Image 1 (spheres, rainbow, N blue to C red):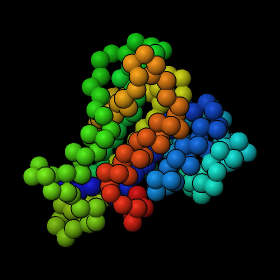
Image 2 (cartoon, one colour):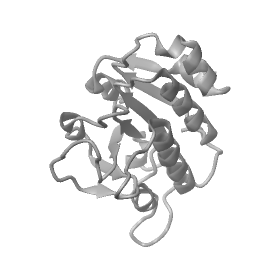
Image 3 (cartoon, rainbow, N blue to C red):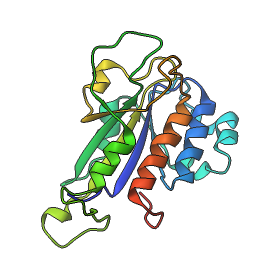
Length: 198
């Protein structure tokens, strides 16, 4: 299996415009450029001064970002004919605000290492090969829930994997943009270079 060649970050139901700008900045510092928003509280969030200021130079991410009504639309638009997609939800195994049904979470770093490493310990290639199977463009999407409640159960059900960011069991409060930064960093470190825009 080859490493996904395209990465999309999807933010769900964002409330604070500043978080969108900060998330764009976090993405760009790690070399990722595809941002999608699903039903943000402010439909004009991408053009607000607070968003632009918090992006701190990552305005190109905001300009190219897309807004969707549903998660299904954001995922469907991320697919090309003949492409494969890995959908990863994100969250914290310990939730301070609400009870959740049991979910199997995998630590992002562990999951990414497995994704880029073959069973024999060799590393997958990021470029496209000549085999017919390698002609498929593989994509990965990281989904982040709203600032207060995280991802809805129905949205979690659409994910192939749930990535659980390890946090203090007694204080599992993580800012949205910080979560984006952590996932983006671990994924970039797994990819191993900044040569390719993902």
